[in-house]
Image 1: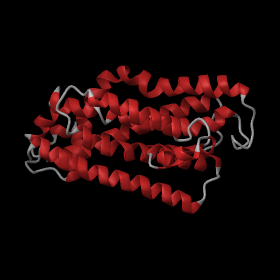
Image 2: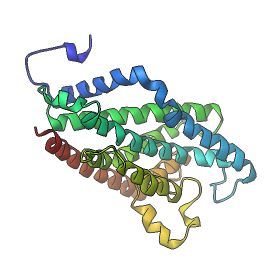
Image 3: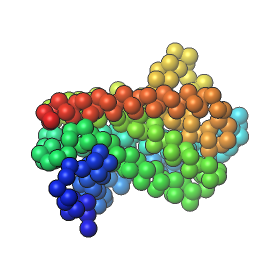
Image 4: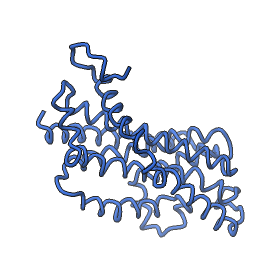
Length: 269
């Protein structure tokens, strides 16, 4: 029996309400998951094969790659990159659809579920999606021999945190859009794509000009890449790790607050 059928006559708690929102998203997803496989799972695998094993066959192990084959060096960073990119996809058009096209948020708001709980449930669903897609990538990368050890499981944890640090502010922004979503083209073109190129995914940040470094430092992907790669290879230091994690959690907390506020303003409840 699903959660929606367990009526008690009382308003749901925050966790129950968020679970109901997740259940609603899951019902849609299990019927339409095939439409997301290429963008969320296969695309990063193609990058791993083309760059990790294709281009990587021309890159010998060196100090730049921590003494590893390029595919092994790339895999944990590509995990973080794919998770953050998937977060961008989940935090934009699906959120706009809930307000403008499917209008499912309005139906939820007519129930005892509050706007803040809807926002929390949407973020929880995005986190679930990031875990699923990241785990699928790891399983395929392991089959290809690009994973160096079991510590990469912690890379998935840090990658999801980085993804949510990017998703929460983006959900807050998406809740303010009342058009057909043309603004998201600017987000992907001028934020997501450049962030992927300068965050140290494909080569160390030290290989870029010094003036690019501050741009990378403010991106959640750079912090996620440093954590993901560092924990996978056992090269991470405690204090830098705490700094990276604190920055990501702060972004997530601020983004979540604004997301709940903008949902309340948009839904009027």
